[in-house]
Length: 74
Image (cartoon, rainbow, N blue to C red; front, side, top):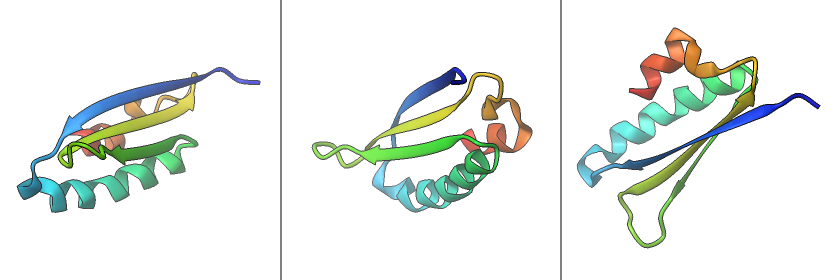
């Protein structure tokens, strides 16, 4: 079995930026999936502006090394 990595990010998204965040997540998830990775996000039940994002990928295929994913992570 190949070694895989998991990266997590805690992100605060003000309600005024939520639509833009949601719109940016879909292409990021699609780009990660297209590279053989997985991307998930979870919204806090206690703090509606707090999200936990996960990016899981093969050790030799970090999607964060591709220009498209780098741009989408900003």
